[in-house]
Length: 383
Ligand code: BGC
Image (cartoon, rainbow, N blue to C red):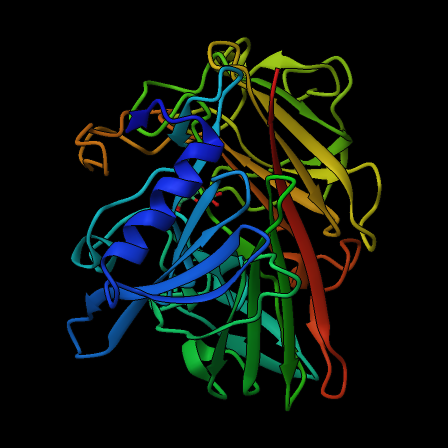
């Protein structure tokens, strides 16, 4: 939904409402214009309370995250004339998130993306995971981190709203070895950056690859397709896949192909020519030129109509460009609009798919005593 409220006025108006209706939500960290509010988002089918955390920065930008799936439900950012729009796809109610959906807004783990046939070896032992995507394992299995209720704690500092979500995944949950404690901290800076910082520790050797699966539409949720959005990905290479979307192991150049987004190009310009299984479209891992390890510029997307721009910075070595190819109009979103093919795009920062079965890919093994760390920033502006 879109609403024309100058950003600063929006911040004041919301604050006035909160003052007038005490007890409506718990408000923490009100200083220098940023705040975090906590309210209820309902109860899961198995009786767990789910909370909604609303982060508001000094400019009136709002991010809403629920403890179910540590999942981003709304993100309101201004266009070039100050008009706010919610730029992520999702639902209004918890029951919809608990039903089948393609990971809208969710934190993905223990291992994001695919593992071929759900099989891998670690420490001489073979592990078998659920095949929940054709013959392969996808996004942590039947009940991955996206379907768990996380603990939450506001961790705002200096008036910058932030909430840390924590989930402990038991040894052998979904077939993965080791008890793993994962955290993701959402911070909404006053520079209109949504910062996601992940950590994970384990008590036995395991594998881990965490990402966020938000579907963005910079024109606003329910505002048609993203095919005209201009995309830049700072990557010279990608990982080609087989018919089941498992990397072949090759690391191929994008130069001179429809995979090349080194220069800003509309997502839809060459999408019909992308090789791969039906229904086609981009669903590929890019090998970021910066190599990972330090937070660096990785991608930029601009919606030509609204002028909204999203920069993606990450410390991950890869990014999955997924153009909502499997959306088919059967799911209706927050704005009451059915999500058609290409209603949103994902830029999932990650280690490469099926990395555990490809020794030439950056490793995803986490040892006890070590801390997995990863940061991704979605930075918004307009021009
Ligand atoms: C995968 C797609 C999948 C989508 C939703 C993406 O990360 O690459 O193949 O359809 O998630 O499940």
